[in-house]
Image (cartoon, rainbow, N blue to C red):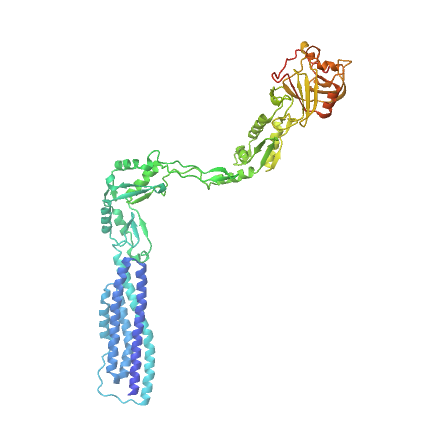
Length: 633
């Protein structure tokens, strides 16, 4: 009896193992169903929900078969060998039944799977007759029976797995054919037509929704600066018109491939589904605020500007000016397509700048400008400066046909000429403070002062720029003076006042001579030139004047042609004190002085030093000479 009990436990365990394998198959099938349902959307969920229900029924059928088999085993303990044989046959014949069910699955509803399993069980399980007497087992029979039972248990385990796999395949095949039937007249999930979500809709359902929405149609026009405007369907007489294009989309949808199209979105646009009053639409578009004059800003091109001593690109400004033609087309297309939104920026309706900040030529120009404008030249005029910086240099740059920048020499020369005009003093008027402390204005016409050599200065400036020089220099000069400040007479000079018949001389601001003089004989037309500033042209000692055998000076310093400063031994010392003596007895135009005064001037004054001659502080220019002035005397 103990041995029979062990055999019974073994058989029961094997039955439970088979049931567990079936449950494992169901679990795998459930995971597949759950994954498909999760990825699909609602349509695939409905299909797989039916499949899951059919799977539960099939599972119940398989469980019933095993339960019945287990019950009979318990009742027929004595017939253990026969029952074992019967259990060995069950899996093979159940397999055939499942295969037949799989072949019939396309045409038979899944809800009938349990019924088919019940019928196959009744047909295939052997009928075991009750045994009235218990046979007597011998020890060697028991050992043989144990070996047979172990072999049969090993054979049943893989067969249970095969049954579970077959059931899963049957269910998946059923799910596929249910989906195929569903999507023959329903749009795939993720189908969008004219901005309508047509997922799982039929053609009729979609048309109904579109027609209902046209009653409250509102096109939102999205503009720059977050502005929006609207056009209502009622504003333009919009109404629905049935279109075959939607039906054609359904016809072109291949239901056989539904499993490949349940993921992702598919967008379509159909036309001809609506009609409207074009005149009313044009009037509505013309009334939009974005198209009214004065409501938009024009675009601005990206450009090069100078900022923080360097050239950079100022980005373009898009503005808000619309292209009328493009705007009308974009709005019209949106309405005809049944769209509820139109973005004028995305539709490229705005007038764009001609040059953007990423323009290759513009960026190349910035590089060239910064390279050519690194020079910094300062012209030093002692009390003022003329500066050539990057901005000024940039104004002289022009681009050739190859797109390269170069300095326009004519523009550089014009700047140098302007600098010369503002700073040259040669032969021009001068402000002068007399020894009386009174400022007078000397007339032009003298030969003292500065004069820039414009040609050489221009040439050197161009080279400084190309060499990226950073220098402080002076211009090139044709004529120079003693002082480069605005008051170029400076603090070293000779001053002569004809009306006072007096001379003053200063060296670095220190008075070195203060003496009487005798100037040109006005009565005879030999008046000394006055009213201007001249430069000492030369210096000679022991000078013999031509034309006069007795005219000799120890110190001769001409400053205006034949007119100069010199000692006059023929003049008596007392003559220097006689008022207006010069008027009738003066020189032939020169400034006569005593020997000591001439010696001081000769020692302190050099060629190029200024000589200022004026008639009086009230009358700068005195009487003009009428005779040709003669050197000396």
